[in-house]
Length: 375
Image 1 (cartoon, one colour):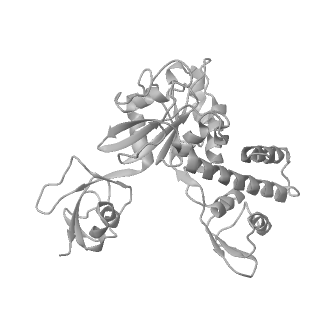
Image 2 (cartoon, one colour):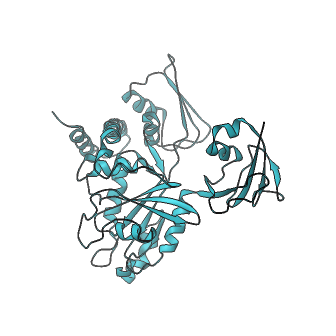
């Protein structure tokens, strides 16, 4: 009996062989929808079983967790050791597959603690279980950010084929990098067929396409509202509801061995990508990499000041940028929001020092906050 992986491979081969045109579009959408359904089955398997291998059950600590992913011997372990100050057990050697388990390390930067995970090198077919692919990808579905590590080959050229493979493997198991969830609302009804409305011009999807996709998921009665221009894949992701939306960027390692002409071409080769060049050997740009990690996670520091005492400037509360006083209360304890009276703020978000604010006040990095409770 064919496995889920076999069925996906057969459908992908058929999809690849189908030439896109107006006559084949419905067939293409049907294939995409069926492939997505099968991939969801794989995601369920990955989520339930994939993370159970030795070294892969990593407890989250710190303010955020970031996973390193790349092909073997791209320098992940070296970078982890540098970012964490050599405070990890990640092995470094000049041969493939040195890292065989998930190795955690902690990076402290500007009072923000980020747990970094050095994962075994990924290979083509990881999402179908090759190597330790499912275990690796299971971890990446739980992290707060992803760093994709690529490097230069022996001729000093960047291997873009590997980058393409990694991005596809992540996409296959429902990881959507640097994207927000599609802004599509689906209201299921008992009758009336399929209806749709939109406040924007739809350039990628038509009513016929919508009906074709819905029929593959046995949805015959529903009303869809598109709040932004959306693709058929966006609609499929919305229906399945199993995608993970995570910030990510590319680390181009080993810049020290890059051919000069390749360095010049990098902006064009990586156009549209979020990337940074580093060298684990010469330590070039490592400080900038730390800064980029914090910025990509969109984190800020808020210092709590007890009443009639000095603020604790050593242990800030870490929140997402644009968080409110309400978010700060919820992070401390649910009772803080329930018993909230008012708060005082000093810093960038305050109109004047000690401004009295309420739950909806938006905080900024470096603010000092005092919360007053009832009773």
